Amino acid sequence: MYLSADREQPSKSVPKANMAAEIHSRPQSNRPVLLNKIEGHQDVVNVAVLIPKEDGVITVSEDRTVRVWLKRDSGQYWPSIYHTLSSPCTSMAYHHDSRRIFVGQDSGAIVEFHMAEDFNRINFVKTYPAHQNRVSAVIFSLESEWVISTGHDKCISWMCTQSGSMVGRHYFSSWTSCLQYDFDTRYAFVGDYSGQITLLKLEQNTSTVVTALKGHEGSISSLFWEPAQRLLFSGASDHNIIMWDIGGRKGRTLLLQGHHDKVQGLCYLSLTRQLLSCSNDGGITVWNMDVHREEAPQWLESDSCQKCEQPFFWNLKQMWDTKTLGLRQHHCRKCGKAVCGKCSSKCSSYPVMGFEFQVRVCDDCYDTIKDEDCTPLATFHEGKHNIVHMHMDISRGLMVTCGTDRILKIWDMTPVVGCSLATGFTSR
Image 1 (cartoon, rainbow, N blue to C red):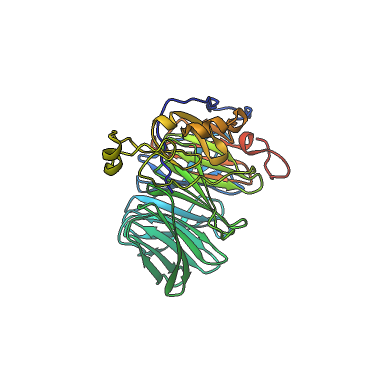
Image 2 (tube, rainbow, N blue to C red; image 1 turned 90 degrees about the vertical axis):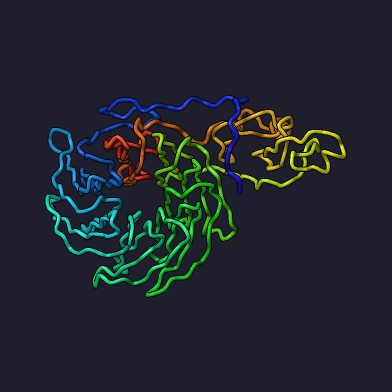
């Protein structure tokens, strides 16, 4: 699948993006509401997790600290726990029912803590020698008592939390960057820097490669698994999102192009059928997935334009026979045909195929696109900092974003992801 887009001047108009403004005390219509900013870290915060049913946030940072921030009577967040480790903290998993925290480090180790019931103290439990290099993702499975992780040593490992011993390990050809896990089936989804996603079945002392998903042209930067509908969402440095219909077993994929930078966070809201995504340039996009969408076509290969039949520049025989200069090859994003620039001189958005921005289409396809076909199926908002991580508490409609500015932002997302009894959200 070829997913890159040419950058031409737009021919069909698209609505301007909404911009999130200052901190608001009450929701503003149709945009996220910035509730709080948390400052204090000396380096980039790699992961932040909202504590369920509490006004609290757990953070881990390159400044080697694990911190728990609780909201005080003043309305501001202050650290109730400030714990320093020996190596930069790169990833984290938090299990709320058991109050266990697993912190991945740049050294390759994972450190387990147990948090006190009042969230004012954490106790060291044990260290797991999971990797030989930076830990990129951590997940804890209470059912199997495994801590599962990926790292820059090109492997996924799963270790027993009761004995602290290694249960299994599987190596890849590239750095592993992100991880999702299906707790019922023990399937792991591993994204890597080559742009591939590998589906593995994890077992005691062994693993089985089920399949490899290929579609991105850049390193995988975020994954989100929706177990009920068996949908996998992936974001990458190619600025694209792909929805993989794992449960459908027909290889169906949907392309979503709505960011201008690396996609750093994904969250699917199954009750409202919306996908929330964040990117490194601060973009926050809410996708309506409760509509009919079409798969983007595969790009066709040809030695000449499939419209006017003029040769492309590598087709030396036809160039010689017709005494003409070869042309540069382009592709129509709507039909996938290989065309020359003259036959694809126009651009249009086409949201039903995931193209929220202007993309190149051939002249024939352009004539078939109606104004209503350009109606956006996503809303665009601005986080006003370069987002490196996001986490959402779906039950409360709250989201926290971490930026390269070392600031955490807590957002009320209910104005843009729904606010009703059906979703369980309450207006703040």
